[in-house]
Image (spheres, rainbow, N blue to C red):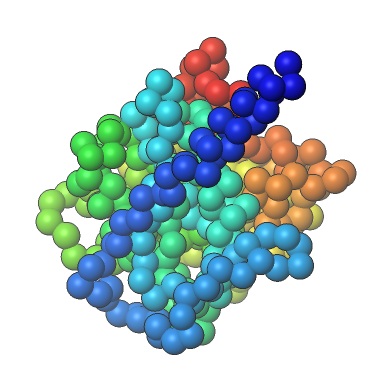
Length: 297
């Protein structure tokens, strides 16, 4: 028995050690449009005191593609957009962890490393919006290579990534491309504690967001005690989407704060529950695999 156990452990270690890293796709091989960010200092991954890894100084925006097992694949893809206040990227708990969760549900998880820092730019969201719109266009053009349905490409944004996703989807095109504007728009949108949805001076939805009936189905999750992304923004966004006839779902939890991502917090059940609700919503919209066919998470 011990011998067989040793063989099993050895086999599993080989599988883990030889697992392919995510495929990388550079979004702008010839260089991205203005606004630019400096290539100095160099891009880096830094593990903080909280044990989480974050990405700094992204001057070459790109995608990291995580593919599900072929037997689980639904043909859908979700573009994951981490937060980080436009100064860094919450690369792990709002990025790679999310992509791996998505692949366990049969969805291609594609992490966006958008340019950063842009928090000192006059319009911090502009560069990230360009990168996101280019990302959706690129994924749609590469749909056959990625084994996905070009009509089932969603976006899941956290905090500043949620703001980016919303502005890119409900705002005007910020990149040059051929064809209909739908080519740069996702077919589903998930926003988790989206940052600065409200205009602080008008207390209305920010002016670079045009809420209209053509927006895709939208899922929103938020905590009441979030000081960075007040729940009023998510609540008003939900109400306005419903008024426009956009299919929408909202979950506001009493506790959770900001920035929990895929890392639940003690005493805050919503920080764990949101992903279960999001999965049900993804099944409703035919993005996620049937429960009887998914891997055990």
